[in-house]
Structures are given as structure tokens and as C-alpha cells.
Image (tube, rainbow, N blue to C red; front, side):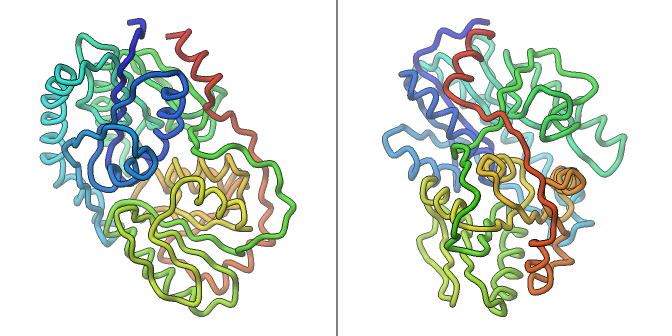
Length: 359
């Protein structure tokens, strides 16, 4: 189905802010090419969009409100218990989409991991880096992939934010043995930030802590960070990843709830090391700035654990498990870690033009 659109609905999953932030370069490319963009979002995603795109219409969508377990071993069971809620949201958002399309005359739908946002009469594009979904058991991985492909095949196109070359950045997550029936396009890494080449400089901060992800694990990591950094004699800034909050915490270090994208970019560039979750969007953005990263996978989130191990084995990033964190000992050791550079292909306006020509 060729895309001849004027009005585009862009809607990310509200499972952490990664899906939202990686839609920003796509939204910018659409605006640059004079499409009328309407956003669909809820909760933190909507709050972030309001700050980044105050001129755009934001329509409320059902919130998934996924909650993680406090203990790693409980996470699969916690997620399993939320399956009925997830299915309910998929059904509601699919039903609501029909009304949105009619009311706002939508011509094209771009869904970042929202399974219900496809339309039988309109071009529908699905964004995911997880063609293969990590799970602790082989049988569960197979079941999840069947469900994943069932929904992806309802869309006309699947955009994968990775390089097409073997393995890319996400490895077997984005390069499974078998692809879905829907045409797959590798669009390069999605990042709000342009590649920054100047690595030799005087840094404002020694360490930047970039917190993100679903609760309660985001708060649990924040508590560990705030407790341990009080004992560090270093220049530290903490970005809490809470765009809906304006309250900042008092500390001898700089601690902020949230900043606009360009301000975050300045802080990252002026930080020697960045400590963050190993969420795929965080990794894409940090590597696009060629940052030296200390990754902490969310306990029990097999995708993040896989990415952290893969990039540590490739010597691209350093990583450690959350229960093993001891910043007093580990941060000084980053100077001895042999960080290897990573050549990345980043999504751009030119890439967007080429993508549309091949769809």
C-alpha cells in the first residue's frame, strides 16, 4: 500500500519513555516534509510530547500502565498477571482508532509498539526493534514471537530502528532467523541527537545518571543512586526521567526531574560517563553521541539483560547488575575499561525520503 498521506497519527507505547523519545526524530522528519502530525499518547508520554511539541494536537489513548516486580524472579509472573489488562488496552485502542480516523481524517498511522493501532483501509506502520522477544524459556520465546508476528502482520510496513547489516546493534532481537510476512525496513538508529564528533574536551560533569523505565524499578534505582552518590567526591548530575514533575531534589549534586531534549543533549555531551538503563532507546541515543556508557539492566527484563551483555562482550559499553552496584568502587574503574567505538547509521531526513520511496 503506497503512502499518500497528509495527516499522520503517531502513537508510541507508554511502557517507559523510550518508545516516546525515539518517535521524536520521526515526528521531526514528518514536520520537515510538511505533513500534519497528530500525536496519540498518555501519562508521561503525553507530558513529554507537550514539552517537545507544544504546537501539535495530542489525543489521549488508553494507558497500558505496566508495573514491574520489585524482585527479578517475580517479573515474569507479574507481567503474566497483567496480560488481560494488556489485551483489553489493545482492543480499546483499536476501537478508538476508528473514531479518531473518522474525526480527524487521518491518512497514515505510525504506531510504536501499540498492537491495536492498525487500520484495514489506511497505511499502517509498526515500529519495533524486537522482532524476536526475549524470554527466560525457549517455549515462551516461541509463543511470544507467534503473538508478536500475528499483530505485526496486521500492519502494512514494519520499521526496525537498527542497521540492516548482520546483527546490527540489537543482535537477534532485530535480526531473527525468520521475518514476519509484513515488509520489514531497517531505518537506522533513532536518536533525538545528532552525532557529536568532539570527544576530547573539558567536561562539566564526571558522571551523568540517566534514570528511566517503568515503576517500581525506576524509583528503586533512583534510591540506590541518591544514596551512593552522596559518598562520591565527583561532579554528578542526575536526570530522573519524570517529565510530569517539576520538583527537584536537594543535594550536593545536581538533580533534575526532567529537561527538554536539547538541554539533555548538552548535559550528555558535557558528561564524561553516562550511567543509564540498558533500554534500547537510551543505548541508541547515547551511542549516537559516542558516549562512554555504564549500563544497568532492569532486573528481570530479559531484553535489557541481553543488550547489556551483548554490548559489554563487544566492549562498546560497560554493564553490571543492579544488585551488584557499588558506585564508589565501580565508577573509578571505568577509566580502565577499553571502550570501543561503534559506527552507527542514524535515521535522518534523507533516510526518511529513501524509506518512503521504497514503500
